[in-house]
Length: 115
Image (tube, rainbow, N blue to C red; front, side, top):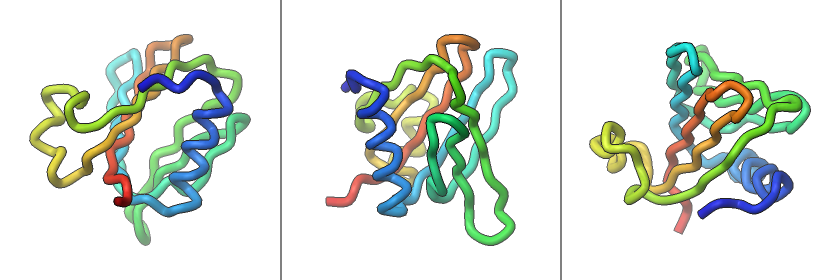
């Protein structure tokens, strides 16, 4: 499912933060740099960044959003990339993908939606 507007994406990301939905984040930059983090979406601001942080000193992943164009896609485990399918049972049944069109950087959030 593609969300139609930036405001819909922001609303969804803020919902993840407000409801403290546990998630796993995988980031890959266009230059090949990769990072993963597990935890909660601690905050999101279109002007600043999306921050995923773990408990205690587990670290965090901060992805800047300021003035960056992006595409956003939302789906379930049927839409996961093949290399992530083995993790679906542990990581979650849903995912959202953000591709920054200015650089090709890619962020995937995997989580279980509450039933």
